[in-house]
Image (cartoon, rainbow, N blue to C red; front, side):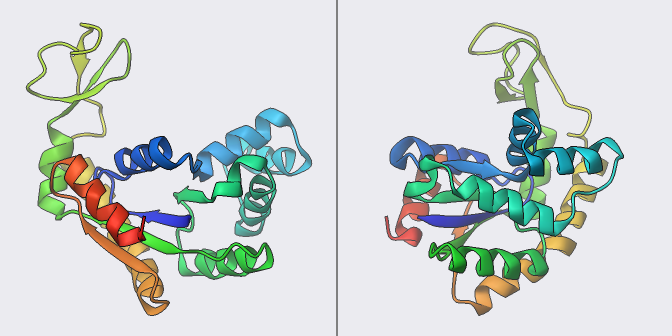
Length: 208
């Protein structure tokens, strides 16, 4: 199973990825995770990436692709990969297709967790996080259900910021959705339901 995970901030991508990892053992790989791991390991590519990051510059697509290729050589990817945060543009998507073809690991699907913007705005603006353990709950949680810690609202979970994040997502990701639809690899699942119900449709859409 090699899939690209798509969806707006707050759509529930992380929740669905965690369920797939738990059931199938497929590694959930994000661009950020790859960069941090490469820098920590001080690999040749990691040191190159660190140079861009330390200077406050974006890491070039070519270097990200090389880091992905390096990550795919690790044994845990034998079961496939769940890519999160990459590709971000159609240029990156084309490069990813080429790379995976070279590795003889073609992409199976691009999974879009689809949720209406207003639902996401309400969802994120009511989101609360525990200061102690990081548990994510809602405004209804007076204290953390897991550890009893204090719940707070993240600075970026206000309506103006959330709307801006959704605008950026729509602008950057719409062409990507069209690209995978054109490749007949787009699987769309309604994310505005209980996560377990969504997961049933995710597995059905992926043929699992």
